[in-house]
Amino acid sequence: MTSIAEPLQPPTRVLLGPGPSNVHPRVLRAMSVPLVGHLDPAFLRIMDETRRLLQFVFQTRNELTIAISGTGSAGMEACLTNLLEPGDEAVVCVNGVFGTRMADIVERCGAIVVRAEAPWGQVVEPAAIAAALSRCRRPKLVAIVHAETSTGAWQPLEGIAELAHAAGALLVVDAVTSLGGCPVRVDEWGIDACYSGTQKCLSCPPGLAPITFGPRALDVLLQRRTKVQSWYLDLTMTQKYWGAERVYHHTAPISMNYALHEALRLIAEEGLEARWSRHERNHAALKQGLAAIGLTIASQPGHQLWTLNSVRIPDGVEDARLRTALLEEYNIEIGGGLGPLKGQTWRIGLMGESSTAANVLLVLSTLERVLPRCGYPIEAGAGVAAAQRAYAA
Ligand SMILES: *Cc1c(COP(=O)(O)O)cnc(C)c1O
Image (cartoon, rainbow, N blue to C red; front, side):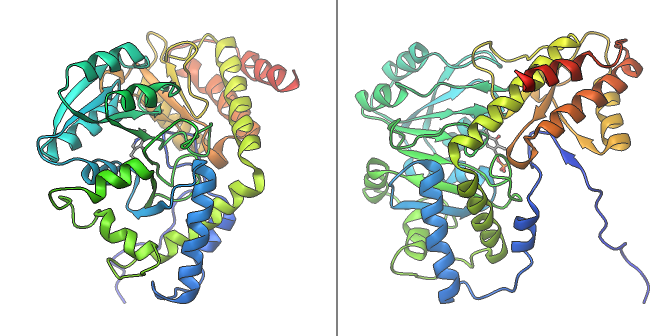
């Protein structure tokens, strides 16, 4: 046989970029077990367990808590297309790539975007949201990104639901880079619709988007005057497959659902609180280590994510040269900046399985080794030592 393609042989990387994160071997094994049909009783049981596990990680009692087929962006699109109809007004908080993407989807729904903005790297102030709401006649929803992966800004959500609800609007939250990495309390915070993705802090390959709709969002969905624009993402139909009726809509990606089930079981075994403090500890150690070699976190002080560290590139340092050296010589992936931050920042993700002390020490020591070659002369050792001290404290 003539070879038309090489055998699959991807390198084994340490994934410290903006996602995907490393995946536990148990999750990889779950993807290789035999398929069953998407209406097989064995699969329906797995779906039911997945719904319960998702309710646990989202900290919600919402019945409509399921995994949408597609990546995090499908979760974003599902929330917005199901809640918005042409002519509706939506306040969208924009301070990075993902708020910008939400605004784009809102426009594609035929709805009117009213922006509440902040500079990239900063969080959106409640006053800006209140001002945007006051510019609307009948705001349908407020959409906000909890963890802005493009900038490393950690948006506080306390009190935002009250603002939205007082104006008669729903609160929609992007928890793609927060769910499984830091507290996300859907019920306690009054969030009406929330979505995430599997490949960030849940440490599962990309392919599903966990989503939850509360009673107010469900009401809005059931009272629509028009059909949901997207057939594939129409929750009135997917709900009937995940719910008691079990009506065929589209074939569930079986192996992806196996993977999510196992990834969620791992989270339940670790415990949410323990998982959050692991992310906090590793972020703090990395930050101390970076500071010791003169590197700073670029996002707003007091609002810096544990899961995604946006690092300011020092003057004169070649961005791509450093990232290429890390990847090719050390098998470590870190991310570059996006949009206006391209060439300005590196993005070091510490998400899920990737958030370990071993990885923090590894990335610091390799940075210390590679930086001098890229135009930043430092003596190796100070960064790693500072991180060690942070762990010992
Ligand atoms: C990654 C990400 C998305 C999009 O997820 P995909 O899996 O790339 O589709 C949406 N929002 C945020 C905050 C993200 O980090």
